[in-house]
Length: 94
Image 1 (cartoon, rainbow, N blue to C red):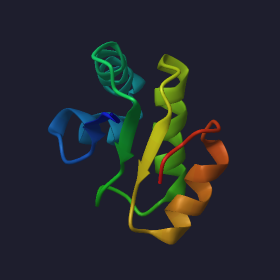
Image 2 (cartoon, rainbow, N blue to C red):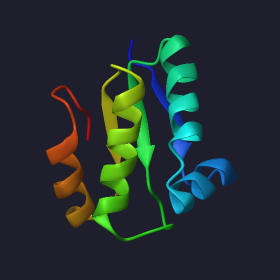
Image 3 (cartoon, rainbow, N blue to C red):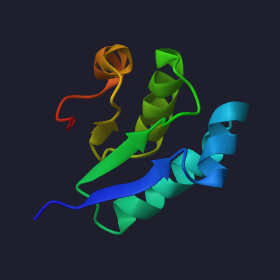
Image 4 (spheres, rainbow, N blue to C red):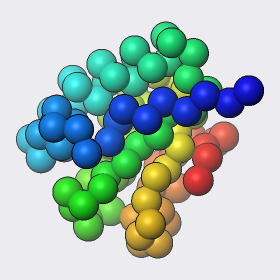
């Protein structure tokens, strides 16, 4: 069975603020909690907060600094997906 942690999403106020402020702590805290709970993948979703691929790349890199759990890139924007793939470790989910 595959479990995807869905909490690293700018739809949540704390994550939205963290991305806006470039504060890694909330993203890494949720990454650690979800990994410890057994998540197979960690969903990373920039949402409507930004259309800048660099923001998604920052989110992915921030999460990967905290845990070894593979990333699930969650976006409907091809340009963001293209750039996020470049910074993800092998084994990601799209």
